[in-house]
Image (cartoon, rainbow, N blue to C red; front, side):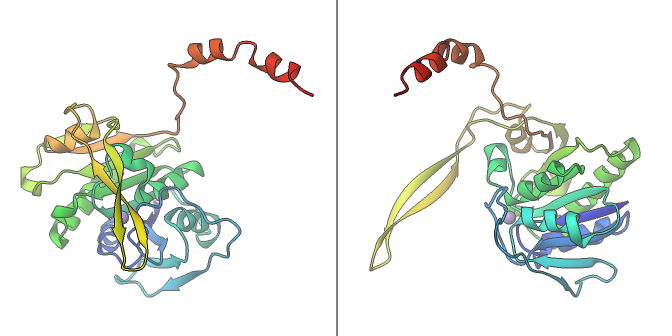
Length: 263
Ligand code: MN
């Protein structure tokens, strides 16, 4: 098995190396990751801009590592498209410092990197743990869990429609209750705007806050808040089926009106 490992905390982040070292016990691991921290860039890709990549000295021996002067998605796309010439079996993004739950997945660079792999037809997995649990031992345990999950997935056969978002709850490992397969929570975050002044100019500051939503144990937020590890299977189906009939009524005759109004 060959695994591309990326992240959005940057190639020198502790989380990516602890994950890569653990995964190197079950697979060949190649790190391709952004040269700096880029949380919250989501699925951004750099078009019409040169992307420079460079092999770096690994923090642990036996792991090849390349930095890319671009976004997490750029790193995965360049990694899969050019840097790694052999067959890649899986893309893993993480371990992110901070959870990526509910609508956070829409802005998460960690999930964005996994998505870049998934969009190119590779099984992909994003892994995050709560920032309050951030220490080396906890990361090692998170990495060990990830490796176990990957081994089970690999035994069952990794399929290209696999896209998972994994989050560990804010608990010591001994206190975690189990694993739940979940869906993404809705209306979980809100962006508010604060005003500030730097002494010269006024500015706005976006603040992303989580919203207290009723705990639904089937969601990722529900699982983590109740002490479980959350595994959310995802895909790209963003269409909403509910308003279709309404919109079909609204748009009946719309094109005819548009055409008959031409001058
Ligand atoms: Mn991050």
